[in-house]
Length: 368
Image: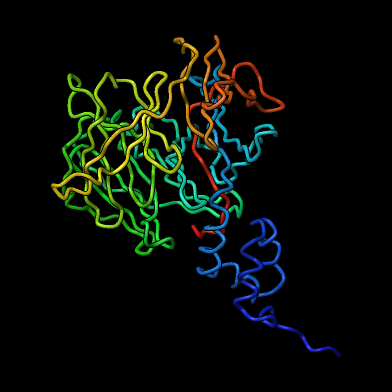
């Protein structure tokens, strides 16, 4: 009889080097071969190397809903993925949701993990009492439900906390989820599986912090925020490493209706048809490393009407969402050639589909 060979026969370093260049779906098949292969695919070193190599291969996740049934007793929500510009949007199965879950939304995506909030629609229930926070890896199909944060007692049932999700820049094994609710700031850490209140150093007590308009970049979370209805917006940042807040002023102008984006690996903001990117001011002699300078990147040459808006950025192209009667349409716009690109749609898409959110996503072996 032949001798059974270990998966490390070629040397662990060489095996990791080879596996780090393969798609996640192939690696998941290997994990079924033996306990050794299973352990190897859960090795943090392989996960990090594979993620680093896959980071340039961004996919797109869209959160969609049936406009005809959005406010009915049985609404239809879903998530689709786009990995190739030449392909169509593909629906993703959501077996992670219970039959009683009526509403879902994407909190965010980082290092191949997606944070979702699923809510059971019941009358007169406070939002977090009826919500479930889920961490999900779409490609490995692993998921887990997180414990709920303990919120202040004196809040209205329509009040919703602001959430943010990401990894510290120096720790790709341990994600954090941030919950901001009025003056209360809490952080969930994967390694402890628990929530804790933090001091919230630098937090300006935002009365309005927009959870739908936020991004994660290099271990820092950014939200569009306001302290008062009568004042303009600013950017609120939270460093996941030292857990300190900072306020970033926007470029001069009217940014009441603005969306945060990532443009060429930098924080960016779009207002109407202009996109501005932020960078640290190295010439600032005060020593303030958080001094930000905004630079206009481009303007979209066509006139955006009330039924059209900049919805996001994907692979250095702008995604435009167009509202037409009872449905939405997504299409690409190239800021260099100034031309509209392909209309993004699903093969079975109906006219009453709407798109509520959009996030960039990269496939990975990250553990939930």
